[in-house]
Image 1: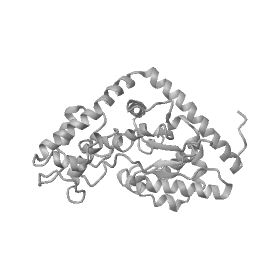
Image 2: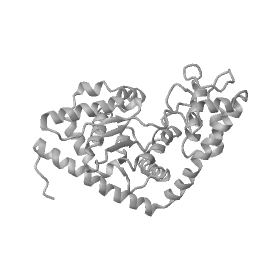
Image 3: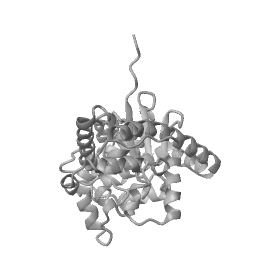
Image 4: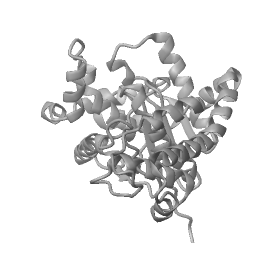
Length: 335
C-alpha cells in the first residue's frame, strides 16, 4: 500500500515585538510535535513588518531572535523549514499577481486594516491595505494544506481561500485551497491586565509574559495579574476570567487538570496560587532561555540555517511560480 504524502502546514510570524508565553503555548510548543507528522514551513514575515516604520538594525536583530527561539524550543531545521520571508523574492511576485485577482471591497472589509489604521493614523499606507494579499501569497506559494490561525486571522485565511478558488476557477488546479488547523494542545493565553483579551506582544509590556523575561520579572508580572475579590481558585471563564487564565497556563504547562488545580489550592488564596503559576512558567521557559542564549551567540550556525533554509524555500516557491507564470501568460524565465 502506497504511503500517503504528508500534508503541509504553513505559519508566518512577524519578528516585531517580543514573543510571549501566549506564542509559546499556542504555537511554538506545538510546532515541535508536528514536524514528524507534517511538512512544516515557518516563515518569519519581515516584509509584513514594513507596514509600520522600523529601525533597520533592530528589525534585522529581531528576525534573528525569532529564528533563535524557534531553534531553542527544539525545532529541527532539517525537518521544519524556518526562513525569512524577504529571502524569497517569489513572495512579492506572487503577491502582485494575486492582487490582480483580489477585489477592493474584500480588502476594505478586513478588520485588522481598520484597527491598524486607527493605531497608525499618520501612516495609513497601501501596504497596510494590501497586507492580506501578501499573506495569501505566503500561504499559497507553498501549496499549504493547513494554516494554524487564531480568531484574529480567520478573515485573512478566508480571503486566501477565496483568492485561490477564484484563480483556480480561471486557470485550473494551480493552488491548494488551505484549511484552518486547530491544534489539539494548548489554548489561548489571555492578557494579564485584561483577561477577556488575548495576550499580545503589541500590548503594554506589563500585560504579557515574554519568553525571554527573567524569573524575577515573571514573578512580578504574575503577582500583579488581574484576578478578583473572591479568593477562590475555580475555573469559570465567564465569571472569573483572570483566575481561569492563570489556571489554563498552569494546566497546559504542568499537565494537571483543572479539577486537580482547584483541589490543590482550595483555601490557599491567590498569593500562593500565583507563586505556583510563576514557578511553573519559570521552570518551563528556563531551558528554552538557556538554549536561546547559546544559539543567538552562534552567528555562524544562524548563518548556516538562514542560507540553507532560504535555498529550500526558494526551490518550493519557484516551482509554484513557474506554474503561475505559465498560466497567466508571462514569458518563461531562461535564467
